[in-house]
Amino acid sequence: MSDLSDFDDMYQEVIIDHYKNPRNSKKLSGNYDETKAHNPFCGDEIELQLIISDDGIIEQVSVTGRGCAISQSSGSLMSDSVYGKSIEEARNINLNIRSMLKDEELSDEDLDSLGDSYAIEGVKKFPVRIKCALLSWAALKDLIDKH
Ligand code: ZN
Image (cartoon, rainbow, N blue to C red):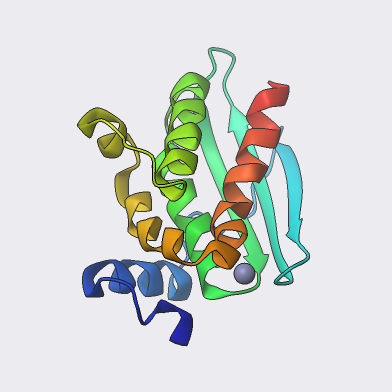
């Protein structure tokens, strides 16, 4: 966890909690969409499953994988942030996460949309880790863009 030592303590705690107790990690059954994402720079893997309703709501989410704390924690945080959201909202949150990690300015509303995923904000200080943090978000984009 040495890579987390520069994070603000509160966010470090959130990240470690999601790493140790990943949310929405139960595989789905039924009619789900699935994608896998791989970060060759770090060896991280994310498997994402979504069930999206006919009216475009993310009704069920499953995130599993292996790899560094940032990648796995970010996957868990992502699943919480988009659970129950519309595709449009999820797309917007995805853009806001990317803007945050590029150190662009976000409105209060955009920051609120991120939910606990705001905890990965400190990753922007470690460019090599940004790919880890965005792996699950890339998987999400992959699935919702197809929808
Ligand atoms: Zn990684």
